[in-house]
Length: 417
Ligand code: EPU
Image (cartoon, rainbow, N blue to C red):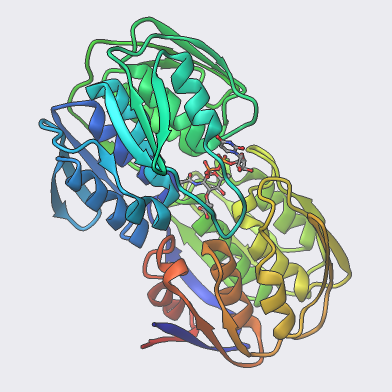
């Protein structure tokens, strides 16, 4: 198993180019199932999760060609296999995103129930409820969701909770349904808007994405298109914290400050100096940062995918901060590892109290999930001495060429087997 070794303690400095967003690329790749014509996606990040998604789509019969790095053509002219197997869904829950499009296009799909997850229970009841409202017959057989529908019918669906992939699955299914679907209490995440814009480029009739009511008028078929995946806001936030927590300076290119509002506000509040233009952000830190309280919630509130990284910033900031996690029930797995590096954190239920210390110390630590891994990398680069991070396959699911990018910013980081 591979590990990362980081020699920390030096402020980072330099510029970095942000990759395409994992959480936009995954649903957008699944949109290829909605048409028999060739669909070209650009700015696809090279990650374990995108590779897993491409293997799944290929297994289902999608013809895939990688035109050049980050540009992929997908043609789903003949879908020969309706099954998304457990082996794939258990390694990447986003595989559930094939359910809606397969059902809409070929009238049947069998997708493994995802099962347990490191960060919380993460049921998929809202995906199922929405598809049933659109006329699908769904049964759970031998651990698989078996969905069938001669033809999906537009429906008015009020979602019980805000779910990102739930909204995306139903939006994709509704593009080919008979009549109009209204999704109420829809997720407003920028990745949902990116998927909607991609579907519109393929001929779908969607309005309201980015708000909490999305209206989709079903069409007979979708057509070929080329779509560029948006930049990754979580990768951007992770690099901003790398610079902020290490007391350094960074110029971030190919990003979208307009969708990072609350993250930039919190960094400002902590004392970082930030400037930005349409697609770039500069961050500089000259003094010790101040602790910032935060509470995760659906967009536009503070993203759960940035919670672990802000925990690291608070670990070495001046003062005490309170972080409340409201999206996932078990997303504090990084706390015990950060404590092994000298952080002073108490957890009570879904709240963590972080008392800032002046220094973290390098240690051997274990990654438990994707964003927890990112937090350990950040902790490693500000800690005194050597940090060895085990189980970094979690990190490779969501960060493209992270050690190469960090090396260019002056971090001493190596991957070992
Ligand atoms: N939920 C239900 N029922 C459902 C669906 C969700 O109860 O049918 C609950 C979940 O258990 C959770 C909450 O609703 O408590 C929100 O979950 P959501 O469905 O929004 O999460 P997701 O769609 O599975 C996406 C991202 C996650 C990100 C969350 C929240 C993708 C592929 N994944 O997951 O990304 O944390 O939204 O923003 O888009 C990551 O990148 O590290 C990551 C985990």
